[in-house]
Length: 72
Image 1 (tube, one colour):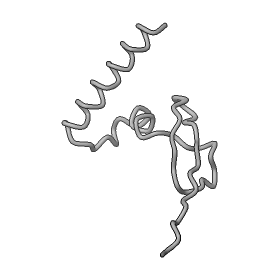
Image 2 (tube, rainbow, N blue to C red):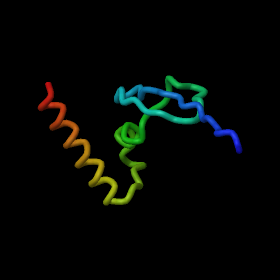
Image 3 (tube, rainbow, N blue to C red):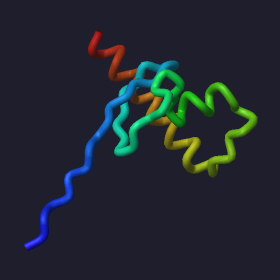
């Protein structure tokens, strides 16, 4: 029987949006971490994602905003 390898999970918060996320690698500068969506909001000229992904992200943001408005 082999031992089960346990991975340590680190939890961080985006400095721009406040969104929480997890990673298995420890960040050297956790105060500088941003989410992908926050990065692309800051740098729209570097957004090279396919149009399908952009549409899905936009729809998810709208759904999240509508849900937040309903729960408040």
